[in-house]
Image (cartoon, rainbow, N blue to C red; front, top):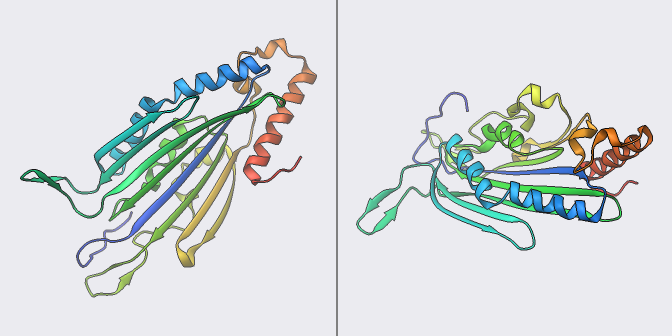
Length: 252
């Protein structure tokens, strides 16, 4: 965040991060595809996601006021945290806190298509904070918490606060790109594209993994059991799927 700003009263800026990842997998048969969905549903159930979001809240210095979680049938999960920047102070039977209550939510979306032998797992995480805390410092943690083949991120700062002289401040930290907050070692593993509109404090970055190590994308299939031609075909299908998700349109 850099040097602290002297403000008049409370920091009213709202910082919202939308973080989405896609994990792509090759599952040959309809049975394997369903087993993959069941595996993902168990691996990233509401309990596991609660741990991830609780760690995220701790990293940004937020305090959890309320937690709600739910697993869904046939698949998917939801976790929502209500957070605050300042400690909650009990007053009689009523709990009070600063007005900077914000939230963190996560949804999961496993899916597959029986004709393509490909299954995709999507995670949507939304973090909205008020005051001086920002969720950008958690990006490396979020990326490493999931098998992230494609990542899309949107960051928006809304509202304004004032300095001690009464001048409006529409941004309280320096940012030219979301990529500035991601470890260079991590960035080197991805192709990255930015769309930034600094005039309205709106920043977008999308990333796609550069290399496909086929063994990491096979579910219940041994790499050694595949012929070179089949390996090349599967790799090409995975790359096409990833390219369409990254581009946000049907290409092939």
